[in-house]
Length: 607
Image 1 (cartoon, helix red, strand yellow):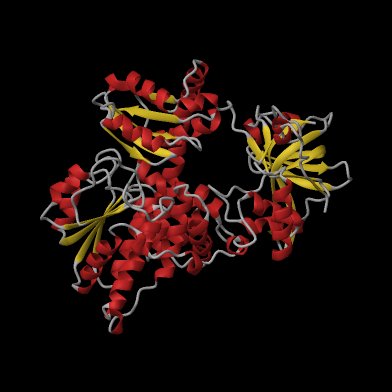
Image 2 (tube, rainbow, N blue to C red):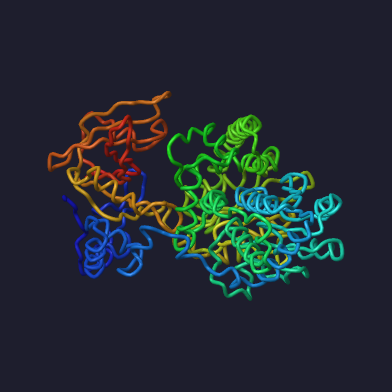
């Protein structure tokens, strides 16, 4: 196989530069992934490849991801049975499980209060299905982002109690809501299943199960709320089994809940390693059966015709479920996930699809101006970008913050001005800079009215008078962002020749999936390539199809998506055919019984 590897030089900077690209056509540096030029790693990769029966380059990719001879097999074939922790290692889990088991045994009504994002909807759906399967009556509540805001509120909780709930379970929220939850004392037993950070005193309730609470030593701080809900269901079922409950009652099918665990894990951008990797790998298999009526309807409306993967979850299904909570009916996503009526599910899926299109329009209205203001702040030397707009919709500011973060490689916070003049918004961070901790510190310093989150994302609200002081606080606490390059470096895993980019190699590289946070799809470079032919395809001519030719004579099909406004397109369509280095993903694609290999271009540089 024609595989080119980086040379191990004496100068570390020179050794890390991939193909000598300091500034690509999009202004990015190409850098070898750390360790890609290590002789020790190459030897380890060769050993892994030999044991696993894989090409040497795939063994090297596994070694680059921190795998060893001992654990590479588990990575390639992640089994939940091997990764599953004892739920009891989570602080307060045994107390929570005992109370939930009691609710089942006494046929109590249970109230579930969930967040309005995908993770909250999935966690709520898992618990609702679990308790209903065990014979309990269940009422759910997803708060309206505009009228109720994030997290529990007393009227909603009292509404669940009024419907007969003796046990209230808050999922994907509640850790930082002591002032609200403490008001429910004596009205119902309360359990929180959450993963958000909070430095404040925990609620004085029955149980707060949160792997990120300061006194929890479970080591599970990387799981989402839906995964936590699944572990709570496992623990509850275990208690019921110990009590002999299933000797006279049917046991619940917990494995069928893994589709929602997988969806939430991907959409909440949890690292796809260890337990999360097993959750997603197994959950995608469950999802592919399309047995959950609502999810099957959503896959159809979203055009997910093949077996779903992490990309389907993150870019097709998740945004549609989120759309309801952003700009329309907050509970619509959960209602869809719980629906068992195909006709009803189809109608709800169509509504979510329409709402998502509307969300895209609202987002586009804000994005251009936000990008201009962000560029001005970056040029003025701010390490952190913080924007607020009067007519900006609170439901899309988090998405806009994410786009700005990607464009400028800086932590970005975007807020919407409310009728009372206050600012309510969301932030997104870059790897290595913990935004959630800084937001909590700002709230404790009196700069924010509310605030919380985790390392990569957070929500906040503040009085308008505090805008400048808050921005200064962010710049000081996250000053390291000023040292980041203006564009995110591309980390190249390996360089290939065109002739070496085969279907077989692409299929073997796919064994590293599911890809996502913590397990990036291998990014490979093609050196000194010429474009033989190019044409526009697709309904709007927005996809560029190319035929590549390597110096070795090999030929390869390539695609560039969103070519209309892509800065790479003019050079790729240049009829003088300049030699180029290309960076992208190698994937095997099957169509009408035939499998071909395609290179999906992410960046390019003149050779």
